[in-house]
Image (cartoon, rainbow, N blue to C red; front, side, top):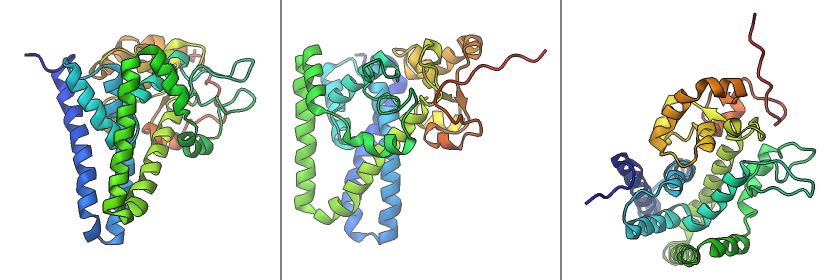
Length: 296
């Protein structure tokens, strides 16, 4: 019987997701026995792992569910939800909206189609500050609006989304009952930081992108180690241009459309997206870079 819907390579992110959940449980058990410096180190790794999961494992799962079995897909969705701390069904709804707007600029009424657009809270047609986007976006989600939209699209997914949320809340409550120091000193601060890192990653996946040209909607990074560990998350211009293609096909898409990308001025940064502020060619403004004229 065929287990994986698209590719056997999806076993890798599936095992990574299970490993992530196991590490969180392991940290909960180890916390009382660790010195403060080890708690800080593990906390920072936990924060990075949340962004890694959201942008790699979870993101690819939303576009191409890993299993042929609906039950297995529901089970993995639930595991991801309680591990990274928000409903995968709600995340999928928000992410679908992201691909509808592709980080669009504000319309004449000041709104954006994309709820995650870096321009949604900006001014004068520019993206907002990376600082505010990174540290405030966590608090901007409207669960009621997301639920209404999700229910309109698929009532069954909306119901399961509530199950995922209630499961997460119940596990957090259990964590406080069993070890409130772990929850206050480790889980909550590093959980929040992890989601901030995810928004930081998202900011530089669109900062400098061309919102008017589909092939240049996203900003790509071809850093080899980054793409190896983050399941080709760096190929973001390619992903927005062909969002339903499997994560293992992103390099092929890049090679296929390399000339068209170059002609369209697709922005490419050297470091991983979360370190986009270190790129030597980072533009001062969020408007797309003008493709350079070829030298004669």
